[in-house]
Every structure is written in structure tokens, then in C-alpha cells.
Image (tube, rainbow, N blue to C red):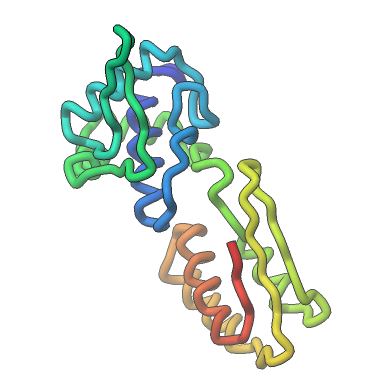
Amino acid sequence: MAKNDYFVIVYKILSYLYECMKAGKVLAPEDIACDSQLFHISQRYWNHIMYELVAREYVIGIYEVETLGMHGFVIGRDAAITMSGMQFLEENSMMHKVKKFLGKGFELSGESSFSEDDLALFMKYRSIECMSIVTNQGKCFSLSKTKYMGDTKDFYVYAAEIRKHHTDEKERVDLLISKLYNYDVKYGR
């Protein structure tokens, strides 16, 4: 299997749309364009893949257009994966092979904010009042403490409990960030 294999591209597009939906993120059409950070393929090849995804109703918000004899697809900001697309991602044996091929190394670049270590460092030292991260896609995430920040001992107890019950680091970080509100810590995007 190659990085520009048909099913690899399909997996990346559907996974990206699914992650955007779960995160409540508005899609940036350039993120799944033929020459994006996810992949670099020809326009013709990309058009064929988009045709299949739309025809099989795995996606919505991607529109087929034809003007002046030219044929292609336009990605709307409302582009999203459908229930059929999610089912295909989860149940199709080829998608499982692609997921295994890409391994843990496949992450949606520029989507992650803080790590667990970042949060632990931020919460441990009261002298760190603000922490910011800029991703490789130019997205900014920040944490800032207010003067009303309370005692953080039970935060570490909560973090240990989360670690026991959740194996996915991104999920753990999301849970921890949502808990920061209780300590008068502001999270910004």
C-alpha cells in the first residue's frame, strides 16, 4: 500500500471529516483539497475520489460543478461525513487495513492542542500564568490562570482516574481541559 493509494486517500478524507464533526470544527476546504497537508495527488485523481464519496453518499456538502466544459468538485464549509461514511470507516475491511498501515503516526496535523505533560506543568507551577501553543496549521490554543485559581490537588487525582479509564491521550486531554474551568483557568482557541 502506498501513501497515495486510493483507499488511503479515502480513509484520510473520511477520518478528517469525522474528526471535524466530533470536535465541532468548521471545515476549512483546503484541508482536504488535492494538494493539502493530508495528501498530494492530481486534480483528476482527487475528482474521481470525490465523485465516489458523493455518489456513495459517504459525504455531504461537496458539490459537483461543471462550467465552460470543465468538471470538478467544490467543497462547501458545510461538508461533513454521513452516517453511511462513518459506517464505512468503522466496518469496511479495507479501511481497517489502511488504519493499520498508517498506524499511530497518522494524526490530523495541526489539530492537537496541549499534551497531558503541558497541562501538568501548567497546573503545577502557579508562576506560569499563561501557556500558548501555535500548531503547524497556524491554530492557536491558550490557557490562562485567573487570580481566583483554587487548590489543584484534586486535579491530579482526577487526572490519575482519567488515565485509568481512557487509553486515548487526546480524549484524556479534552477531559482535563474541560475540568480546568472548575479551577478558574480559561481555555481559548
